[in-house]
Each structure stands twice: as C-alpha cells, then as structure tokens.
Image (cartoon, rainbow, N blue to C red; front, side):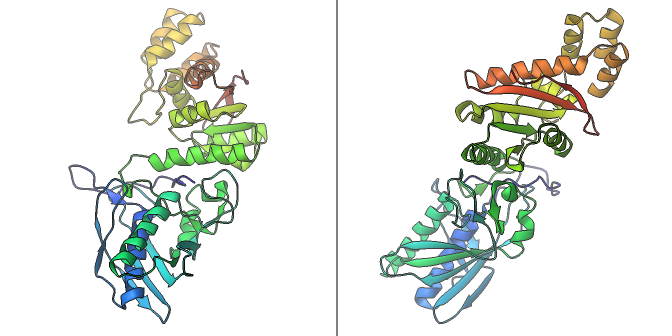
Amino acid sequence: MNAAAPKRQPARKTKEGPLRRGWTTGACATAAAKAAFQALLTGDFPDQVAIRLPRGETPSFAINRTARGEDWALASVIKDAGDDPDVTHMAEIVATLRRGAEGGGVRFKAGAGVGTVTRAGLSIPPGEPAINPVPRRMMTEAIEEVAAALRAAPDADIEISVPGGEELAQKTWNPRLGIVGGLSILGTTGIVVPFSCSAWIHSIHSGIDVARAAGLDHVAGATGNTSEAAVRERHGLHDIALLDMGDFAGGLLKYLRAHPVAKLTLAGGFAKMTKLAQGALDLHSSRSQVDRAFLAELARAAGAGEPLLQSIQSANTAAEALTLAEREGLPLAALVAEQARTAAKAVLGAAPVAVNVLIVDREGRALAETGHG
C-alpha cells in the first residue's frame, strides 16, 4: 500500500531560507511504539526516544502523552510535518503496546482513527490495518532493539490510533482506495520533504493498482474536481476508476507504462492540457507555462491567418487565446487535445493503453474530446 495523498492544504508561512523537513506518520508511530514498549517492560517512559530510519538517520522524538496499566502501556508523539502542507501536521500518533504471545513476534492493530484495508491491489491485503510495510518494519526493528537491550522476548501487539483520524482521512484518497475508518500510517524514508509531492504520486500509483485488481479496463486521470466530475458523468466511471492526477501527468503515465489499463482518459482544462500537449509532465503553474507560440503554431498548421496568429501570440492568457480562436471558427481546443494525446502516448511508449483526452471549461462543459486511440 502506498501513501494516500492528502489534498494539498494552504502553505504555512515560513521564514526565508530552506524549507524545514518533517516526519512521517510511520516515524512518529515507531517512536511512540518504542517508548511504550520500553515502559511496558520497565515501568518507566523515556522523555525522548531515538529511532533508526531506513536510510540510517537516528532522530529523537519528544513523547507527548503516556499512560500505563497492568498489561499495557501507551505513548504518543505529535507529528511535525515541517513546512509541508500535510493534513496530518500536528496530529497525535498514539501507540498502545501489550505483550504478545510467546514467539508471535510483532502484530499490528488499527485503533481509532486508523483505517482498515478493504480492497485488493494494495501492498497490504484486505482486512489488515492500513499500516504500510516500511512503518511495520521500522516498528518491528524498534521492538527488537528494546527487547535485546532488556533481554526480553520481542513479542508485542501494537495498536496505532490517531485521534480525529477518521475525519482527516476524508481529506485523503483513503475512501476511494477502500481504506475505511481512518488514516494510513505511511512513510518510506521516515522523512517528509516539503512539497516533494511523493505521497500524491504514490497515491496515483495505488489508485491504478486498485483499479487493476478490481478488473477495470478504463481509468481517468483528472486535474481537478470539475474535470473529474465531467469525466465521471460522460463515461459513467466507478469512483475507483477516477484518479486524482492533479498536476502529476508524468507520475500517472509512467506508472501506466509499466502497469497498463486498456483505456485511459485524461481530463482537464484548456491551459493544463496545453502544457501536456507541449510535452510538460508536471502541470503546476510554478513548473510549466503555456507557450503561446506553441498555440500559434498549432493554429498555423490548421490554416489560421496571420492576424489571428499574432493575436494568439500576444494573448494575456491561454483562455484568451482560446476565445480568440473560437471567434474565428478555429477549433483550438480540439487541436490541443489531439496534441496532448500524442504527447501522452509518447510517454506510454508501447504500453497497450488507448488514450482519450477530454478538455473542459470552468463549468465542466466539454470543449473537445479525442476519443480513444
């Protein structure tokens, strides 16, 4: 199971300089579990606990809350996502530890606010807590470390919970991926790199995996809610066929190249699809721009006269260029859609994926659609 990406939140204000890194929910869960297991064995909680991340870093985490009973111990860590706009920033990650059956090793349970996997296609099978493989390994290694130091058996039942996690999960891909009841415990490195968007791209991959496991032959990547609603209505697609591509056309196309689905629809507004037509695979405004000269060349190839070409090149926005072309009866949206399909097929290479591009306006009305080919 890969990350269930959050919808991006407004960026927090930061001081000038490099953006501050943060910690994944998996790293925080590991620290909480290690502290709770130590208390379960010794009766004492540490104020801070160091863990080893997959790449060898050994950060320390402050323990936020503790509690202990006759056969259990609880510790929590407040997640600090650094300067990344993460919906789980400042969430409390809670680990409750109990001694496990002798020789049983480490077992995991989803507590309140942590989801359960219900659909095939993820790296965690249905029925299991939505705790990713790397955090599971990190927690297991932490338990083994404490057990070795205290000469105890590394057998523990770990319950991870996140207060308010069920509500936070509605802002992620989890409901669409079939992860019910809360958040996923995530992380492959333990570190959140601000604005790396790796979680979003991983969620696109997970969405494709779930669609393939469900036997779907048609998926759609949409740049936003309006285009997603349009493609859902137009093609009658199931929710799990709808991939929140956002700006990451490259992340979707490259994964489909290796994990093909028979039919793909790419849906978005005119400006975003123009960037794709130009060959851009990251459609964010800070990383790619509409080239009006490119639009003018498309118009020239379609027989546009010099006055219109000059108007398109000097247009203030892509929308203005489109309006100018439409006034002259030039199907610029259709030209862009065809070129975007060509660009997408170039990325897909020989993968057996038929591509359709749908361009919509701000109200979700279709401006152009290529059909699959």
